[in-house]
Image (cartoon, rainbow, N blue to C red; front, top):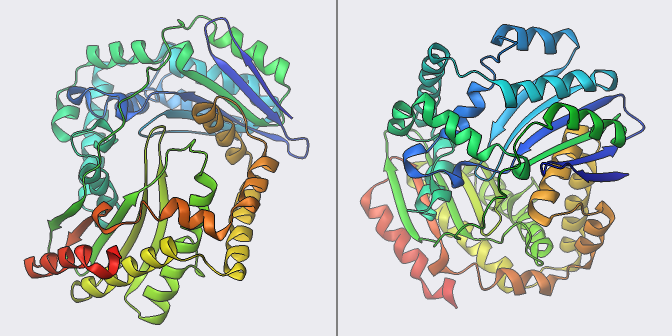
Length: 425
């Protein structure tokens, strides 16, 4: 059963009791991410995430690590474009400790100058590491190219200059402004009683100022075309993107199935056509990148430099085929079963259940029963998939990002491929 309460300072407390397990996944979600940063403070949300593990007024970094280890728990965090999350996984009887620890991190971190300078160097190395990992870098560059000049396109890690120049005072002020009650969700799934959770959270987080709720953001304008980061690599790493849907779009279930059919598994069309039939790539897959007001359908492949044209041509043909012609019932049933199976299997993990509570609240304002999701997936027809994907999967709507040894002649051929009558018709 899922329960929700709202504290006086605006913090939303959401829980799901799972009687069959003895652990609890606990997450403090801050509804503020890299897209909400001003350009000069790019990377600040991620920098704050790092600093909250470096010591509080009552615990240094070693004590934080030692105490979570002492209860056999796990403690971690991540930052994304639309939120940050600080989470712990512990046994049920250690839940009060985990709430105390997470509240200490969020309310009492000291941002000691020496620790901040060390962590600044760590993050700069993290940025450099991304530059040396083309299979990861191409996804970041795709966002930057697709949503150029919009905060959604900026890297979560920030830029070398912004991370180098941000001051302690700026980080502390930025955190105080955005880490407030009306932007916080505290979610727990597992061996948890809701009323006890609310009482413990209220005692630990009740002093946090309410602040203001997050204002609606300006959706990004999308830029289409071809961008290349030329490097001397054995492979060309490419990401092809088309417009997607926001997380809460009513037609999202049809788009989930489109992505499942396209490239989310070994049986998908892209895996079979690009890897199994032609041997053009070892790694080929697709995914949906959805946000509160926008989204993208993304395809990744790693190919030999001489195979770019053929690989992109095959990908585009499959995009066109799936978006113009209804799939056979047998293929649709298999895709439905795969999508539902992945969803239901993920719910056997309390971490995923906790994340689902938070994301439902962030994007819908309430929890959505899993039975409703399954019913909506089952209700999608082959014609529904064409109706939603057809207008989006157009040659003029594609953006291609490549990292590797790409020649100018190949780029020109890809432009012709995008504009070909066979794709537009």
